[in-house]
Image 1 (cartoon, rainbow, N blue to C red):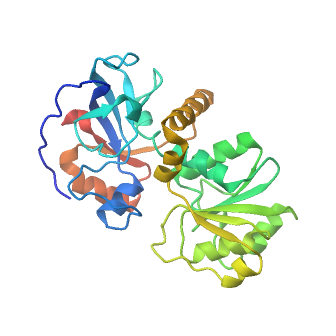
Image 2: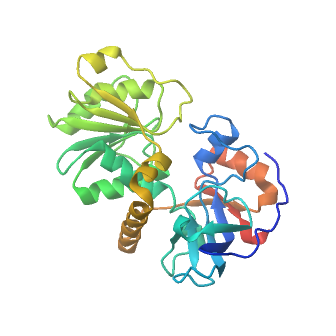
Length: 304
């Protein structure tokens, strides 16, 4: 990774919006991109930054609904910069009153949680599993599952004082899940860890259950007994936010965020902010993000 001075993006035309970026978190997808482990090709010369928030500086003549000063979330990548020109259709307007530090973390995790729950097929009264239960996505899954009447069983890789009821992953996980499920079938599991964790989740599921893999925290290839697939007809599938949003189309994505903002009005889950650093300290910020800094590391782009 290197810092580079890019040309000023210029004046917006047509339906473009000139955005002054304010905050940009270091998302796990950014770390995977830097390590060459991201699931999709990444242009090595393009700015990084899977999420971020900025303020409108100017709009093109075809933009009628955004005014200078309004906060917006770019839907595409490239947010680790000071200024951007973005098409209006690729921006989500942030509700008035939301702080930039909070808004910066609203692009990926709530949408991922919402679409993961949809993909799980879990309905009211059914049981759903999720590992990496201390993650930011997991907080949103808990909030949304409660509103849907889905019982969620949290799983962690090591005891977490913040989640005293969570099960610790290991060989005894299937029996521990069965005791909590109380004879109700477990229909689906959300897997952010992969590796051997995938097999342990699959062993917890009822016949014809599904495991949805959306993360790679273990850094290991998925391991699952073929008998789980052939004998119990377990379905294993992957999930990534960008293709899921592409399937929704632009109007569908904007409707998705309309629902997220309504949810935010009712109260957000804890969204801890970690260290906030200027882009000139990018190496330090990335090191802190890899260590797990107790909250999402953010770049303060307004300081550049």
